[in-house]
Length: 401
Image 1 (cartoon, rainbow, N blue to C red):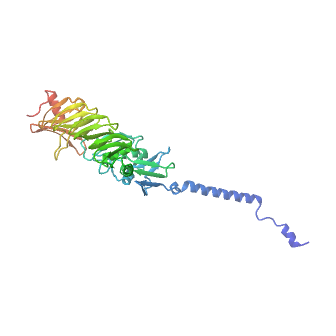
Image 2 (cartoon, rainbow, N blue to C red):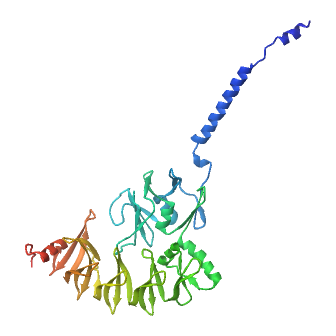
Image 3 (spheres, rainbow, N blue to C red):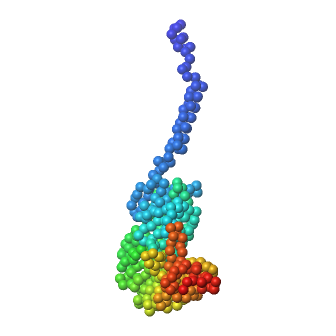
């Protein structure tokens, strides 16, 4: 017998079956751990790159510009988003000297839009406007993350009158301004040759967001929808869209009036000028024969067209005044009127005279704490409005002659 062969036959295998199974199990556990590391430890954003474009140009957004909540709603950061759409960002409330991180406003050359944490109401105004801000409802409240304020993409669209498109998986977001959309609709107008152009005045561009286009036929202006269906015939020498009311202030035969998007006359074309001076309630300042009056939203007269001016323009050390709210003791809201170079106050809803036109001035002063105090001047002397109202309503309080 071959001793070498016998020795080989008696040699045990290097790895037993149990050891092989154990090694395979250890290997599988190792692979599983590596997969878990890849899925949960590495940043998720590395696997899918988000595409973001503004007015047809792709941009590289900041990392936290867009965030998603637990229900899948996408939010955009107001501070970082301002830079993307050409606005400037400010903390606090417009017109107040504060750095409130729960409030902010965004500003461009045409308007100011304000936001507040946990609120679903925003405001819009213009620089140094005497008219109160216009307040709009958004669908979701303003939220905070990473010490910055966010709103949903849908509400961002409402606030800034912008078209926003997002892909189903949310990896591609497209923002288009009304200015950009106007260029696209201009091409359609030129192709159809029904009108000569699209009016691109800032307020009229906002009408695009609401599905309307202010067009001209070479001589006059009218309004069509985005499918080029006529809404208002081109018979007006000028048309200006008001976003809050969604009506149009128009001019016909050198007379101003107000029409709805359905073509219904809201204010008759009888005036040399028409301006909105208050939004809640809605008030129109009208001019006729160089005199001024006030109409409500239905065109009814609140103050007859017989005033020399509406409101008081302040000087270098005082603020202009148009509306004064919650006048004590009746808590009435009043508007400043002027006749024969003297000023008074009238109720903004009824036109009832609160103070006769006997004052030399009505103005306000703002303290360093943003507190507003109203003053009047009569016979060369200055008094607070509260003092004067007490004087004219009682015999107890007297003022120096």
